Length: 138
Image (cartoon, rainbow, N blue to C red; front, side, top):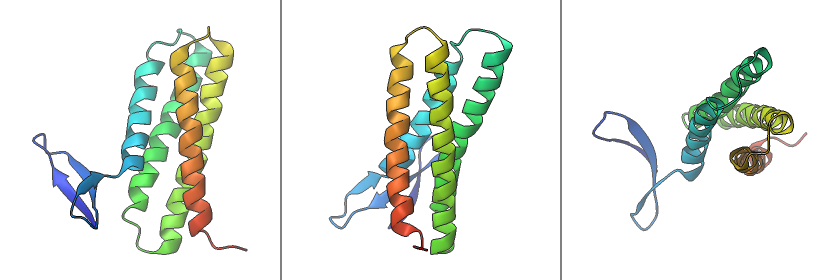
Protein backbone atom coordinates (compact mmCIF):
# COMPACT_ATOMS: atom_id res chain seq x y z
CA UNK A 1 0.00 0.00 0.00
CA UNK A 2 1.45 3.37 -1.02
CA UNK A 3 1.07 6.44 1.17
CA UNK A 4 2.08 10.06 0.85
CA UNK A 5 3.76 11.45 3.95
CA UNK A 6 4.43 15.18 4.25
CA UNK A 7 7.68 16.32 5.79
CA UNK A 8 8.20 19.65 7.54
CA UNK A 9 8.97 21.42 4.25
CA UNK A 10 5.61 20.40 2.80
CA UNK A 11 7.23 18.00 0.34
CA UNK A 12 5.82 14.52 -0.01
CA UNK A 13 7.65 11.26 -0.25
CA UNK A 14 5.97 8.06 -1.35
CA UNK A 15 6.38 5.20 1.05
CA UNK A 16 5.39 1.56 0.85
CA UNK A 17 3.58 -0.13 3.71
CA UNK A 18 5.05 -3.59 4.17
CA UNK A 19 3.13 -6.62 5.46
CA UNK A 20 4.86 -6.35 8.84
CA UNK A 21 3.59 -2.78 9.25
CA UNK A 22 6.98 -1.22 8.57
CA UNK A 23 7.06 1.83 6.34
CA UNK A 24 9.83 1.91 3.74
CA UNK A 25 10.58 4.44 1.03
CA UNK A 26 10.30 3.23 -2.55
CA UNK A 27 14.01 2.61 -3.24
CA UNK A 28 13.77 2.99 -7.01
CA UNK A 29 11.92 6.28 -6.67
CA UNK A 30 14.65 7.58 -4.38
CA UNK A 31 17.46 6.33 -6.61
CA UNK A 32 16.00 7.98 -9.71
CA UNK A 33 15.56 11.26 -7.84
CA UNK A 34 19.09 11.09 -6.41
CA UNK A 35 20.45 10.25 -9.87
CA UNK A 36 18.91 13.41 -11.37
CA UNK A 37 20.17 15.56 -8.49
CA UNK A 38 23.69 14.12 -8.86
CA UNK A 39 23.63 14.82 -12.62
CA UNK A 40 22.63 18.44 -12.07
CA UNK A 41 25.36 18.95 -9.48
CA UNK A 42 28.16 17.27 -11.46
CA UNK A 43 27.25 19.00 -14.72
CA UNK A 44 28.00 22.31 -13.05
CA UNK A 45 31.67 21.22 -12.95
CA UNK A 46 31.97 20.55 -16.69
CA UNK A 47 34.20 22.75 -18.85
CA UNK A 48 32.46 25.68 -20.52
CA UNK A 49 31.82 25.42 -24.25
CA UNK A 50 29.07 24.97 -26.83
CA UNK A 51 29.44 21.20 -26.99
CA UNK A 52 29.09 20.82 -23.23
CA UNK A 53 26.11 23.20 -23.20
CA UNK A 54 24.29 20.87 -25.62
CA UNK A 55 25.33 17.69 -23.81
CA UNK A 56 24.45 19.17 -20.41
CA UNK A 57 21.01 20.25 -21.60
CA UNK A 58 20.26 16.84 -23.12
CA UNK A 59 21.54 14.94 -20.08
CA UNK A 60 19.54 17.03 -17.63
CA UNK A 61 16.39 16.56 -19.72
CA UNK A 62 16.85 12.78 -19.99
CA UNK A 63 17.86 12.13 -16.38
CA UNK A 64 15.07 14.20 -14.87
CA UNK A 65 12.53 12.73 -17.30
CA UNK A 66 13.45 9.19 -16.25
CA UNK A 67 12.49 9.97 -12.66
CA UNK A 68 9.44 12.02 -13.61
CA UNK A 69 8.03 9.22 -15.76
CA UNK A 70 8.64 6.70 -12.98
CA UNK A 71 6.73 9.03 -10.65
CA UNK A 72 3.88 9.12 -13.15
CA UNK A 73 3.90 5.32 -13.37
CA UNK A 74 3.12 5.18 -9.66
CA UNK A 75 -0.22 6.85 -10.34
CA UNK A 76 -1.04 4.80 -13.44
CA UNK A 77 -4.71 4.11 -14.09
CA UNK A 78 -4.11 0.75 -15.75
CA UNK A 79 -1.44 -1.86 -16.36
CA UNK A 80 -0.82 -0.60 -19.95
CA UNK A 81 -0.50 2.97 -18.59
CA UNK A 82 2.01 1.74 -15.99
CA UNK A 83 3.99 -0.21 -18.59
CA UNK A 84 4.05 2.78 -20.94
CA UNK A 85 5.43 5.11 -18.26
CA UNK A 86 8.05 2.54 -17.22
CA UNK A 87 9.02 2.14 -20.88
CA UNK A 88 9.48 5.89 -21.26
CA UNK A 89 11.51 5.99 -18.05
CA UNK A 90 13.72 3.19 -19.41
CA UNK A 91 14.25 5.03 -22.72
CA UNK A 92 15.20 8.21 -20.88
CA UNK A 93 17.66 6.32 -18.67
CA UNK A 94 19.21 4.74 -21.76
CA UNK A 95 19.62 8.22 -23.23
CA UNK A 96 21.13 9.45 -19.96
CA UNK A 97 23.63 6.61 -20.10
CA UNK A 98 24.60 7.64 -23.64
CA UNK A 99 25.30 11.24 -22.62
CA UNK A 100 27.25 10.12 -19.54
CA UNK A 101 29.44 7.86 -21.69
CA UNK A 102 30.00 10.75 -24.09
CA UNK A 103 31.11 13.01 -21.24
CA UNK A 104 33.41 10.27 -19.95
CA UNK A 105 34.98 9.91 -23.39
CA UNK A 106 35.55 13.64 -23.88
CA UNK A 107 36.74 14.82 -20.47
CA UNK A 108 39.63 14.00 -18.18
CA UNK A 109 39.19 10.77 -16.24
CA UNK A 110 36.83 11.41 -13.39
CA UNK A 111 35.63 8.94 -10.76
CA UNK A 112 32.32 10.78 -10.33
CA UNK A 113 31.31 10.14 -13.95
CA UNK A 114 32.30 6.46 -13.65
CA UNK A 115 30.04 6.12 -10.60
CA UNK A 116 27.22 7.90 -12.42
CA UNK A 117 27.61 5.58 -15.41
CA UNK A 118 27.51 2.55 -13.11
CA UNK A 119 24.33 3.84 -11.46
CA UNK A 120 22.73 4.54 -14.84
CA UNK A 121 23.41 0.94 -15.92
CA UNK A 122 21.91 -0.40 -12.69
CA UNK A 123 18.83 1.81 -13.11
CA UNK A 124 18.46 0.68 -16.75
CA UNK A 125 18.59 -2.95 -15.62
CA UNK A 126 15.95 -2.41 -12.93
CA UNK A 127 13.63 -0.48 -15.22
CA UNK A 128 14.19 -3.02 -18.00
CA UNK A 129 13.27 -5.85 -15.67
CA UNK A 130 10.08 -4.10 -14.58
CA UNK A 131 9.20 -3.32 -18.18
CA UNK A 132 9.77 -6.87 -19.40
CA UNK A 133 7.67 -8.30 -16.56
CA UNK A 134 4.73 -5.96 -17.14
CA UNK A 135 4.66 -5.59 -20.92
CA UNK A 136 2.42 -7.73 -23.06
CA UNK A 137 4.37 -10.36 -24.96
CA UNK A 138 3.79 -10.10 -28.72
